[in-house]
Structure formats: structure tokens, C-alpha cells
Amino acid sequence: MSEETKSGLAQLYEKTFRNIKEGEIVKGFIVALSDKEVVVDIGFKSEGFVSVEEFRDKGELSLNQEIDVLIESMEDDEGRLILSHAKAEKLKGWQKMMVDVDEGEVVEGRVLKQVKGGYMVDVHGVEGFLPMSLSAFKGFQSEEITSRKYKFQVAKINKQRRNLILSRRDIFQKERDEVREKLWAELKKGQTRKGTIKGITDFGAFIDLGGVDGLLHITDMSWSRISHPSEIVALGDKINVMILDFDKEGAKVSLGLKQIMANPWEDIYGKYPAGTKVKGKIVNIMPYGVFVEIEKGIEGLLHSSEISWQKKMVNPQEIFHLGDVIEVQIINVDKDSKRISLSMKQLEGNPWLEAGRKFLVGSKVKGTVRGFTDYGAFVELEAGLEGMIHVSDMSWTKKINRPHDVVEKGQDVEVVVLVVDADNRKITLGLKQLKDNPWPKIAEKFPVGAVVDAEVVLNSNFGVFVKLPDDVEALVYSSEIDKEQAAALKAGDRLKVKILKVDTEQMKIGVTTRIE
Image (tube, rainbow, N blue to C red; front, top):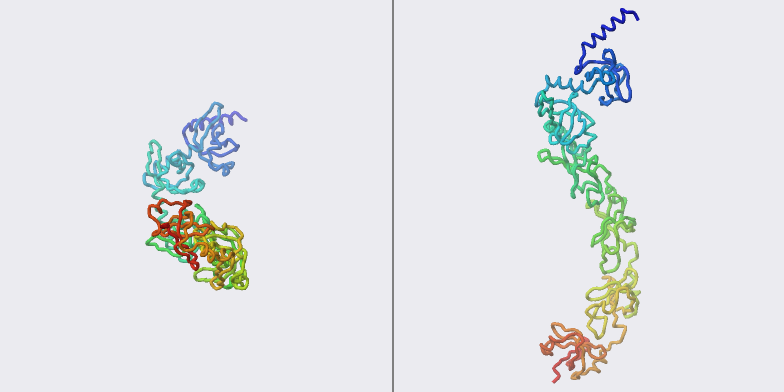
């Protein structure tokens, strides 16, 4: 290289060196890229270095790309020229704001990150603070907040201290009002729109249609029975719904979800004519019957009276469990009321049609004790057929107050058929009739006027029941015993009584303690 050329370059370097200084913003071209640094030529005697971390989108950097940089250090410990792109952008931003921006004006920016009490926002390279209370970001996801640009209002700016406070509250409200007005103008009955679940209650779900909230009532969620809206939707779900009705003045919108699906009741008569046998799943159990889902959205009621041919009403809660799959028969369909009546007993032959022939009056039969009432015991004679032993037909001589003192549940017993009423599904049974009526002999053994030893069985308000020999019970009327004596008597006490009367028809013996 000639001396003249060397001299010219030296003068150029010197000139360049004299014209730039630390803290200034200059333009440069990217001449090299690495994982850590970007090398920039600013026309100085050596290239400068910028940390690659200063660039928000590193993928957009390319060789020969022109960028603005701020000269941080003319020469660091290693003799390198240190530049900053981020500080250049920030300084340029503040220079622009010094001229163009005042409090109350609207600017555009991007949220960088969330910090304590709010968010940091990049506005033309300048970092501003957005307080949480002024952000209007309630309900927004973090990814959504940082994914796009927003408009902000300058709440406070101190240009000397380079301090910027932003607000999005008023702008958000204005944008929301504009969106709401546009949405109200677009709404039509029968229209399908997308919304976001923002609240769930026992009676339905509130859905944000994009500025206007609507109510999706639980009855409009599904054609099938549901107990709670959470079975269908969850907070944050985005779903399509139909506009059923709306009132702009009252700010009310009624929504439907099942209405955008096929109505399973449409061809109900064709699908399930009376007499059809189907299988279904029990979805609800009530004291009066069970609800059976025979297909999605179609339920029928199996009333407790249609479970068995027994006259005694059964308790469905003791027989079935939720989720049980059972076979039933369709006995009635009402499309308008969306009701289907089901039966289990119709799947079997009616046992009462043959009851009179199978169980002849006076015959002895065997059965199993299945249950009790205060006045008797139920005995199953065969599947679907029950008879009842009344307490008065359990003993010839004893007063039976509790039927389970005579027979036990599950006990196999022999009984006598007393009455068969197939029309009313009633069979009357007797236990005492297995033995001959002892009362003619009792009348002979206990003649009127005879005095016998007795044992107190029960002390009641109207008299004292006593047991005579051979387990024969008699009643001492209140008028036939001293009140103080009666009050002191208890079960097991002994006393002498005199026979006043013997009624073999009514099977009763009257006695008195007044022997003299």
C-alpha cells in the first residue's frame, strides 16, 4: 500500500474517530452473526459488538441489515467498540416522546412481561409501567397478553426523569362498548355463535359472546337429563351456541346448546311404539320409580307399580343402582310432554291370571316371609305373587301386637289360603288355621264363675291382658280391677281372676279380679 493511500486512510479513521463519541446514536450494518454477539460496522476504525440478547426477534437478523446503535464504550478492557441496539431504540423512543406524546394521548405497545404490581410495556422502544389496576387484563391468559400489540393511554409521563405510566382501562371499556354495540346489531334468533364459558351456577352457565354475556340454562344444555351444568361445560370452554332470544334493553340473551343438535324425540313414535322391548341404563332413582336412559337424550320412567306384579309397593332404592342396565317394555309414549312410561312386569306373564286356580281357598301352601307391616306379614308364594297373614290370623288365643314376634323375615312357613282376589291382586293367608279352632274346648275348660291363676301379659289404658293356663289370653277390663292395683301391675306378675264371660265367636274371654 502506498504511503499516500495509508495517509488517506489514517485521515479518514481520524476524522471518523473525532466525529463519534460515547452516548451517540449512529447507523451501522451487520457484518457478522454468532450465538452471542452481532458484529456491526459503523464506519469506525474497528467493528462494534452488540449482545444478541438485545434483539427481541433474533430470527429476523441478517447480514448487511442496517440498524441503529448507541455507542456505549469506544474501547472496553479488550480494546473493543461496545454498542447497544436496545439503548438506541429506547433513546430514540424517548426523543420521539419528548416531542410527540403528552398525558392523555393514546400510544401502541407490546407487553414485555409481568412484574410486581403490573406489567412492563414496550412503547416505541421505551419501557412504560402498566399498573395491574389499570390493565383490564382480568381473565386473560399470559400467552394472550404478550402475543399481540395493544393500545394504551398515557396516564402520566415525566420526560425529564424518563418515567412513563400507562393505562388500558378506558380504552378497553371503549373497545368493549364498540364491540358490544356491533354484536347487538348482529344478533338474530336462531343464529349460531361461538362463546367462552365465564361462569357456572346450579341453574346454567354464563357465556361471553365477545362483549355480551348470555345465559345457557341447564334445560337447554342437553336433550338428556343432567344434574349439574358442569357435566357438560367447564370454565374457559369455547363452544358454539344458538341464540334463542335476546333483549337489548334488559341486556339479556338466552342461549341453547341442545338446539344445535338433532332432537332425538323427533321420530319417537316410529322408534319406540308401545310394546317395544328395550334395554336402558338407570340414570336416576326416586322413591316412586327409576328413570331409564334408552338412548342419548331419551329417558323413560319405570314407575314402582310397574316393577313387579306384587300388590305391595316396592322401594326402587332397595332394588336398583345407578348405572344398572335393565330390560323394559314401552307401555306409553307422549312426545309433547317428552314422557315415556316403562314396565318390567309386562315382560313376564301376569301371575294373577292363574292365581285362583293355583291357590285354592282352604288349601295349605308354602312360602317365604318377605316383609312386615304393623298389621301383618307378607309371604311370597311364587315370583310376583305375595299374600298377607293378618295379625288376627296368626294365633287362636294370643293377641299379636308385632307380627315379627311370630315369624321372621326370610323364614319358610306353611299357611292356609283364606281368600284369593285376583282382580285386586290380593291373597289372604292364615297361620292359625293350620290347627283346629280350640275355642269350643276353651269354653268347656273355663266356665263362667271359675277362678283361675293368671299371669300379667300387658298393662294397657283400657285393661290388663292376662294369660290363663294353656296360653289362653283374657282381658281384665278397667272396671273390673282396682285402679291402684292395676297401676302397680307389670308383665309377669301373678293374680287370681274369675271368668265373667267366654265368647267363642269373637274368641274372647272376660275376667275380673273382684272374686268375692
